[in-house]
Length: 334
Ligand code: ADP
Image (tube, rainbow, N blue to C red):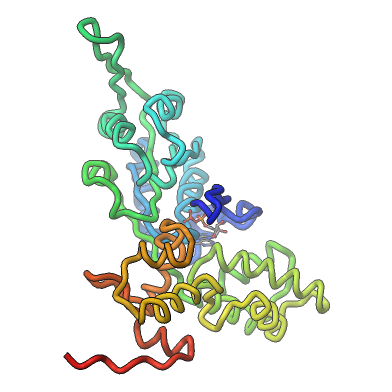
């Protein structure tokens, strides 16, 4: 992801690694996904074969990388990480393919960013563990098939709709990650508070959970902030009053929305009269990148039904007006 200045943003919060579950049993929520993966793991172990290729999709921070790293821990195999955005040419991906050890996992984040030529190059890899390399040019050019070790590709994407059908079909398992409910996030907060050696009261954990936009990565970041606030402003224990003050100070509202989320709704309502309007116009008016809006801002607002997508563009719902304390205009007579 790029920020306003076009600088690449760090994908994960520093210290995410420390809080990442290590085994499948430590994963909170996403029960159906975890159960299917557990079956795949057990079959791979019994047959002594690599895992099938798996595609994870869903908004950022919901656990795509976590699942991949848990699978690698469970199998005790090598894990290599790369990103579609950094694989410009066939030769960029080649070392990952030829160095892959038997049964290992290659995690390709943002796989929707793979250029078409690279994508086509990995089709035979995913089908029968070989790459076709063209040697020489013109009349003397010839293709050689290079056999590879049997390994697993795990792809992650925030935009499964951008994936070409042939690439999507080459993944044997498609797992969609959904936002977490507050119960699950409260469990994650309690587990991670212990890992961070901090005490959080049950009502404070619940407050944090319900103000974390259904996203474990955001819950972790907010937990760290509240912990610092508790140390700086009180005796270090996170109670309800501390959690509320700390989140209010960051301008996080009762829905867990931050300034950027509210600016999106305010722009849609004030500038575009509630819509419908195209997402490009919204991004341009807010001067933030289209990717940030599509990947980070909108999924939660759509999920909470503050915004709906129509063929003519985004429309703010009554819930959005209510949340911002604005009066919804009467519909114009036809
Ligand atoms: P993604 O790859 O989807 O952007 P990550 O896998 O990096 O998201 O998740 C971000 C952080 O959220 C992880 O480091 C981990 O601490 C936490 N997390 C994600 N999913 C879970 C889960 N199911 N249970 C517990 N913690 C989770």
